[in-house]
Amino acid sequence: MGDPGPDGRYVGWADRLAVLLADRLADQHADVVTDETVPAGHADTVHGDFRYANLAVRGRLLDQIVTEQIPRAKELAPDLVTFCGGGNDIIRPGTDPDDVAERFERAVADLTGAVGTVMVTTGFDTRGVPVLRHLRGKIATYTAHVRAIADRYDCPVLDLWSLKSVQDRRAWDGDRLHLSPEGHTRVALRAAQVLGLDVPADPDQAWPPQPPRGTFEVRRDDINWAREYLVPWIGRRLRGESSGDHVEAKRPDLLPLNQ
Image (tube, rainbow, N blue to C red; front, side):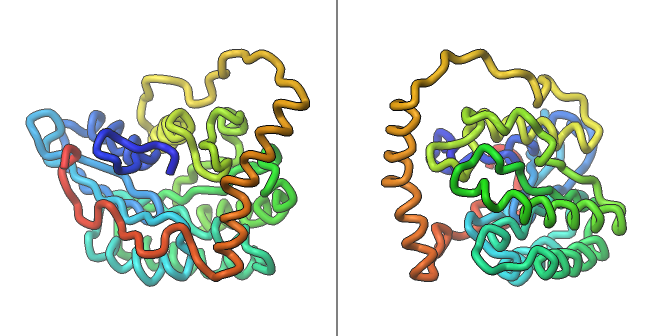
């Protein structure tokens, strides 16, 4: 979300990570997949046999990821899986982060027994997100569980909570729930660092200074945002719908980077 490419398809952080991996592994063979965020690859004269799949679908709950995406990831048997799940469960009213974490751990155990490296992601720090600020403690609890699970299964951790640069408003799309193009880039750079790659830019590089915004301007933006995004989001929740309903994974197969 928040970053359409030239063909109209969204280019998320996992797709950007795939490019970084392909460049690094140009002379090696590597198959890479990502659940609820998938890495990438390309079989050409530059990137060799590198391939990737992206199984992610926006709005998916953890049980849907386990049912729809993990079996496919295991079938593909890639060298790397990036697994980001549970966040949509956590922001729903009445969910228990301890329960979600137990189900997340079962999924991690299943994946680590069938694929190569499994990199897991934490939640973002939502203190600067008005609609999610009150859930910060709940997200922090789940994030602590994710880190503990990663320790138990020897998984690298993409720690988005500590990535200060994405706490800037410019890292987020207009809906304030999905990353902007620059936000996706910074997450991809941090993911590459976690995997031991040298990266072309610092993901935590300071943003350029901005002039201060007046109270009226901030309030006007908040009202417009509520009308355009918050009210429809609440409506979907009440109807039991998701923005990802009827949406399929954009790259269900391991394909070369440029396909």
